[in-house]
Length: 202
Image (cartoon, rainbow, N blue to C red; front, side, top):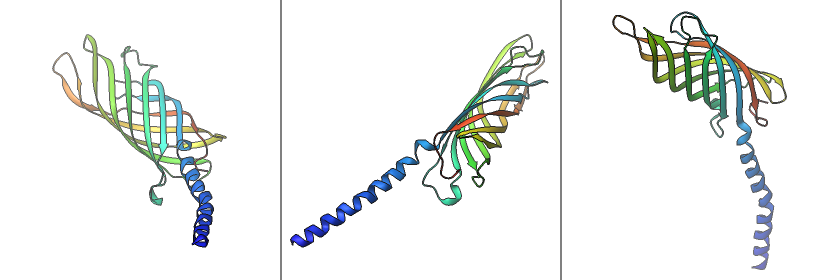
C-alpha cells in the first residue's frame, strides 16, 4: 500500500513540470500577439472632386488555437480621421470612420506579410451642401489589403489600401435631393509595432 502511494506521489511530482510548461506556453501566446500602429492616409472621398488626407490608427490581435488553415486570422480595429489637404470647393469636408473586422495574414515570409481584410463600422462626414453645412452618419463596409514590411526588431512598415461603401447617401442640391452611395478609397502608409514575437510570423 505504501509502495503504491509512493509511486503515485512520484508520478504526480514528475508531471508538475509538464503542466507548468503547458501553462507557460498557453499564456505566452496572449498579449504577444497584439499589434498597434498609426499612419498617414490619402483618400479620394467620392464626394466632389479632389482628395483629402488624415491619420489612421490600427489595432490587431492574432487569434490563437485555431485550425492550421486559419492560423493567419486576426481581429482588426481601425479608426480614421480625414480632415487635411481638402479641395477649395469643400472647405469644411471631414470624414471620420471607426470599426473592426477580420484580417487574414499570409505568414509565409519572414520580412514581408501580405494581408486582406473586411471591416464594418460607423462613418461620419461634414460637407457643404447648397448654401449651408451638412452632416451625415451611417454604417460603412470596407474591404482592402496591403502588406507589412519588417523594418527592424518589432517595428514594421505597413502599406494599406481600403475601399469603402457608404449606402443611401443623400446629396442635397438646390433642386431635389439625389440618393447615391459614396465609395471613398485610399492609401495609408505608416508604422506598426508587434508586442513580442508572434511564433507564426517569425
